[in-house]
Image (cartoon, rainbow, N blue to C red):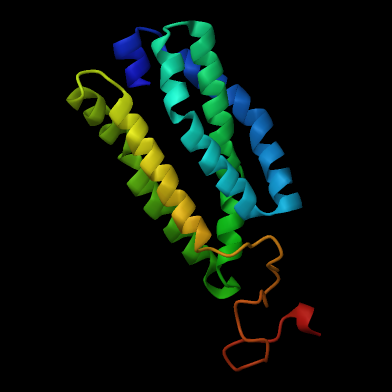
Length: 184
């Protein structure tokens, strides 16, 4: 938003409005797709397309054309929601029932802290490059590659049951694992 307002001279509110409108349609669409084909393919697809759109997005911004900037933000927001739309389900399915809340909470908040500094990093990169956005593009590509690397080490979670005995834990009953209604 800072880049749009300061370097391009257009109001950032336009991008925010477009982003919100795109989110209304694409988040449920990607969630449904993840239910059908799996979480990992949707996440990986979002990361790959995000890498592919990094340079074109900034090229559209640099046109200073409101229509092309809206087009760019719409596409980037749509790709972002390929990941964000399935994130909560994907994270919940990664952790066993007994630590699910802790695992998802820690993961969400740790990535929020790390991701929360991204705008400051991007601003510093643009300032350091004399107003040129290419270092931000390289940064975005690096983050996309890191996402792909982590996802290749992660298992698909679509078929993981969330009903207590989710495949993460031993199936036999132990004193630490009480009998639940589904076990009877």
